[in-house]
Image (spheres, rainbow, N blue to C red):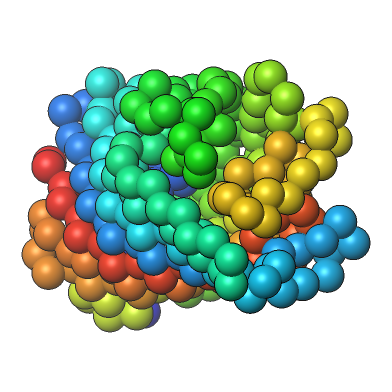
Length: 277
């Protein structure tokens, strides 16, 4: 009886929400998922090259307050176009200096393609390019590193309806970062579930490992999240509410768990979602 009650709801969740947050499921042709989020990132510590948390020099603090618009659109049932753009205000201040920059950040454009679909699961491939054309990389504290990145990723998602009304998602990718920056291995493990007919929750482990073919650097006087070679593991915890078939909202907390040569901060997010079906 429990499965009969939750399985249709689970399938709705998998087809409408989870995959739109970089999971393996694609949008149906002509359908779209839109997400507008407000994000507040704050860090007053860095991970050093041994992975220890150290206070920023001179009681420094870095913040990134931004709006992000993310969209997925189904070209066909198997092929989904992805786009993401940020409008940011970043700030670094300490006992000696204060720097602030605002404007558009990097733009991500991608394509996700369903390779195999089977009972309860899906296997997909995704390609993505990061475009750094909307800001001045020569600013004293630029909004991005000014370089193009290209990423390839394999994604696998599966229903967990035989255990509880949920799903799991696994991803592995490689990002080529040009110029001085190191390439990166990307990986993600995700589990999500309905809590009621309207409430749902998910947890992600989102990891990045440097390929160690760049120059290690922590820019304590600028943007410490834009180092050329670093490792980072984040925990993403979200609670969402579906107001109706189209609209919903999410609250997300994303702290850094471990890393090397980058900032050790956390992100707080409120997001509004809208689906066209």
